[in-house]
Image (cartoon, rainbow, N blue to C red; front, side, top):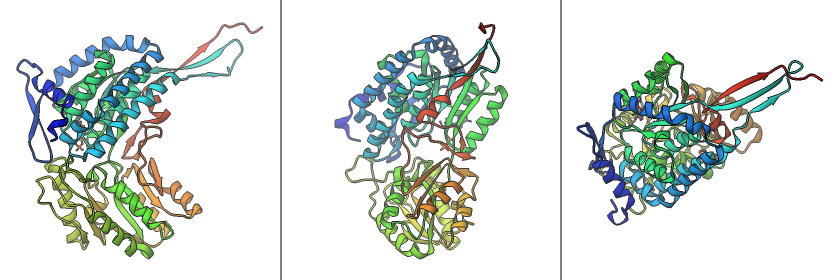
Amino acid sequence: MNQAKLKRSDLWIENINGKPNAGQASYPVFNPVNGQELARIPSDGYDQTIDAIAIARQAFPLWKKQLAKTRSQLLKKWHDLIVTNAEDLAIIITTEQGKPIAESRGEVMYAASFIEWFAEEAKRAYGDVIPSHKPGAKIIVTKEPVGIVGAITPWNFPMAMITRKLAPALAAGCVVVLKPSEETPLSAHALIALAREAGIPEGVLQCVSGNPVQIGAALMDSKNVRKISFTGSTRTGKLLAEQAAKTIKKLSLELGGNAPFIVFEDADIDAAVEGAMASKFRNSGQTCVCVNRFFIHNAIYDEFSTKLAKAVEGLKQGDGFTEGVNQGPLINATAMEKVSSHVEQAVSLGAKVMVGGSKSELGALFYKPTVLSGATLEMAMAHEETFGPVAGLYRFDSDDEVIRAANDTDFGLAAYFYSSNLARVWKVADALEVGMVGINEGVISTEIAPFGGVKESGTGREGSKYGLTDYMETKYMLMGGLSVD
Ligand code: ADP
């Protein structure tokens, strides 16, 4: 770790380490690069979560009543503090999550962008006035905050996935109990420290971290928690959906993906390789919109695969603080197990290793960036998200064949394709069963566009104007007895 640079990031980590916790259990946080223990975090469970919900309940009516402009100004302050402290925040991300520091810097600004966007949107939570259906009456539609929100976030973007939920929730007038991933709680605590500094009241935004099952159960059992916003695995998302049925909570679920990346024969191959690298190997393949299946037209298969393999050979793995490193470790042993087993099974079924194909000597959690040619649809990696730096290449001949194959999955988050034929672009974009499509683009995430999936990839949208309405209820008022003269 770069000790010279650690100032506030050190302090935040120490504060959490030293937080008095009266005999409360604690859990360790590790640096995935070398397995070093970074901190011990007090472990919250069911009771602490119920307490947090009670505090949130008191805070909600006051926060709801605040002028939208006041909420907006507080969010803006939080945004500015994140930007001012960007380097320390980036250091925390790389230290506990492992991604290269340049990616962490990008994530901090991406995380801040949601707060800025929703600080602006807070003032635009417009309702409607509808022409009445009878004389002497008016119809008014207002938007109201849904209430207490439970936000459950993953480790792959330990800051951005938090602000993408918290910013619209707070902007809408909701209060939040946040449960970050137990792999990356330091990022969450640092963001909360800055929220406090910005003046966001304690009851409005609380963080409980520790036992996921207990915290989840408390959030789900409570009638006062009116919405759960979750980003994580489809397995956990399904469990939460079942639990939410007990009290009919609103749900936003950003779950797993199985993104296809299609390269047609009329594509700009170099642009496609560039897009493939960005989309597949960002965060070492650990994003839910990462490509999971490369469908390459037979006519350009050899050219594309050779160029992709060359680009992948040029990647540099290592400690994210080392100059030139653009591939960090996987997050944990379970992730390593999944990546290795996908590659082993694919090779046993006939896939050819063009690059990589094995664990790296760099450390227990490093898997070499890999390109496999000759992938086929019976392989596990065609149906399950590998969530690692492995590109499996499939061949196709016709548009209809590839559209069918791309849609042949339970998931529907993102899809990408490269083509220069306008008619084909519209045909394919319309036919793909996903929430987001990158057309001649490999990176699609931005705070100004709606992020979310269809099928088992989830429900709800984050970011953009749609992101705010996910945290609001619609109330219709019919006002009668008015003069008809
Ligand atoms: P991954 O396998 O990628 O870590 P998970 O879905 O397990 O994905 O984790 C995403 C988030 O969901 C994390 O914050 C994790 O702690 C949380 N989580 C996992 N299991 C539960 C559960 N039973 N109830 C509530 N939250 C959970």
